[in-house]
Length: 297
Image 1 (cartoon, rainbow, N blue to C red):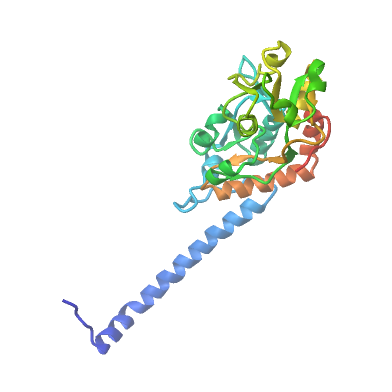
Image 2 (image 1 turned 90 degrees about the vertical axis):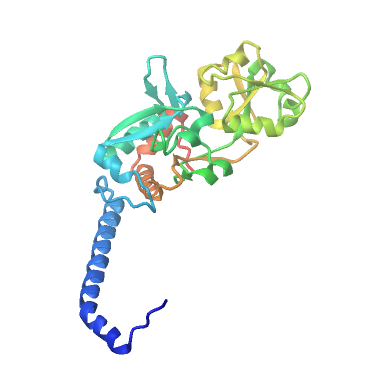
């Protein structure tokens, strides 16, 4: 049964509760505006970390907890020089490891590095760690399931071979032939590229990305596809290795930092920090150290 109020009764209710309702509404709006102002000012201020503010179910940002807990958890594979490397004693190094330390310093928090694998990047980000740093290429698959920071480095897939065999492999068609052995570490974009382009050559899977180049020097494999940045680094470490199509890579890619899908607030903060690192000379100095030159986005 629906009960209808008379116009006089409705007017009586409005008079009785109207002022209270409007006072409550004004108070709520004022509170929301104050919280938003605090957050925006903190996020845009390059002088230091943002002040902790309540996280809503809508954004589910970890940024306030990172500041409160004074620690940021960064996942990294530790097997992709010159961006990330973890030795047998658990010591970390690399361009993106140094960048991670700089980010933590900028936030005023401790850096906790969390080992991950290429196959588990999307599973771990937002669960075991707050973000992933370590030569991660931007791909459609990753972008559909997570967020990326602004890109910081341009790159592309090329081949790396024994220098003694370099004349055999001028381009992709020379590689994809019967009898050629292509080796890749499973789970990353190198393996994805190989699977989509290798139809005739034999594709081998090798699980340890830190020793995979030994498969070339020991003649267990002939070719590996990886990013030009890694190829240039490996050529400096081992003069037996040479690049294929380094100046004209098979693909054009960019690297960025991977963040949880729902954490746009942390993404915006990371972008602000990255922009500052690119303008104050921090990134340029690290790029020269690890890549031999400044390679931007």
